[in-house]
Length: 336
Image (cartoon, rainbow, N blue to C red):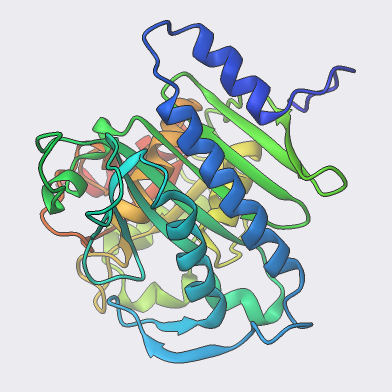
């Protein structure tokens, strides 16, 4: 899976080669991906210096989802925004950290793309040096080109995404993305400041050896969820017993299972009857990546990519990972 070729392929060269396969491409999407690469490098640099600079700890403010914002959350949010806002490639953006969508300022050119993002997933882990990440989702604008972009541009089903991906700030910084033509991973080489192709055409195993879930919520789950997790833990019928691996950073858990095979669950529970993860900023972009790699993602009843959002910060249950494992969970959840 790793790129062992002696030739070094930068993300810029890779995207340009992909673009040549589509003569109708204007280059705007490619340039938007470059903008996100720049934001990733800046955020990665700050993450690497966490503990040395005054970037750790809470900011004292609460975001729209009721979570305490970390200083690095706010830095990452502003970094992504400033990297894309004035380029003429997007018309509106929305972030997990902002209550309302942010249109491009009226004195700036507006492009044809919409950016949705979680600037720093897993930020509760910042202070203890655990892997965190940035998740992004790109749609095409649906409102008239010369008008002001609106929330309608953001409220599109995941199936309409033209690109999605994540940046993982772990032992190395990795960018994994898809434009609907497979999934490719790039690792940041800090010595030259470039993302290099390290994981071409990622394919996730049909069944995996890991299950990832917060088992401290066991008593709040429905019997169906308890049945599924017990099957993964102990082995049951078509499911072989799996090893528990739960980092508590969504991007890190999904990335490990994407590469090694496995399933991540954040089901609804008595405390969060609608689920806890955000549909637009977390579930939908990760679902596109995992589906493009041969996996699956569901809310327990239907594919995540088919869910039509009704509000910007809509929450959803999420079951995502290897196709056979997700199919087993979905079958149990749908059983009478």
